[in-house]
Image (cartoon, rainbow, N blue to C red; front, side):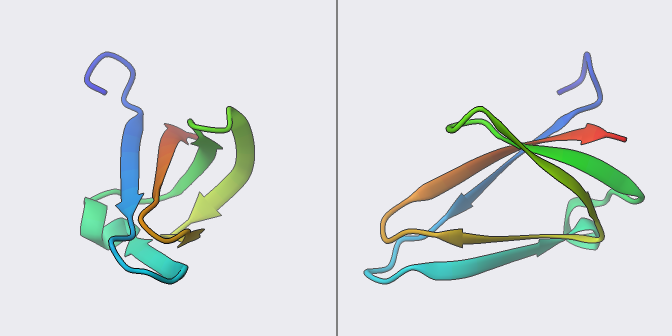
Length: 69
């Protein structure tokens, strides 16, 4: 998000079973600690550093907002 410096990250599962999805901060080109928020649920998830790991339900999507801590 150019105006805020926040990142929105979507994780997809196209399979028929729940899957754990993992994205490293190196994959995104970012560093340090970030606050995470589940945008579908509207819930803060706490602080993460180095990676994002989420279980995504079958044919589902997780949409996260990362805000610089």
